[in-house]
Length: 134
Image 1 (spheres, helix red, strand yellow):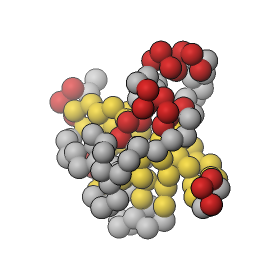
Image 2 (cartoon, helix red, strand yellow):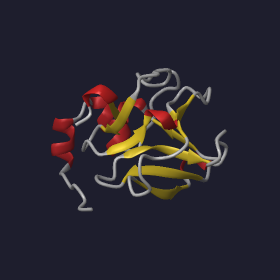
Image 3 (cartoon, rainbow, N blue to C red):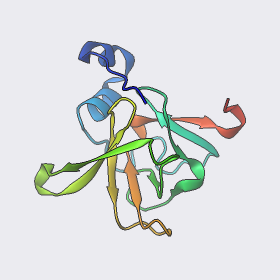
Image 4 (cartoon, helix red, strand yellow):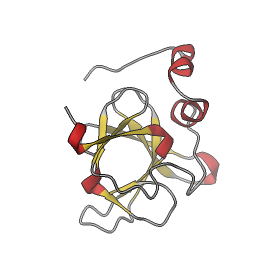
């Protein structure tokens, strides 16, 4: 898979201010503020930066944290993980494997057989209803 690389100016022109701050500058949206936190549509969640499919709605669950949560990516190669020791914590950061957009973090406390909780910022996602998938 080829990486999508754009200049800072190109990302700024492509994204909303909030999406740029979270996806390109490793920010976080406020809990319970995102469009997909409580959303229950049937379809695919894609990267807001490059359109890569990241999560299927069948993997989504209500974690009660205020961010959309998934127990697995759409494919094993959709995401990359990186150690994050910012803010006095050690966590695992989740990035889009295609464009390196910061999406959120993954935690080992998920309720399903995977045991994982991908805690993702809504602003880093677009949703494609299953009826509109190509």
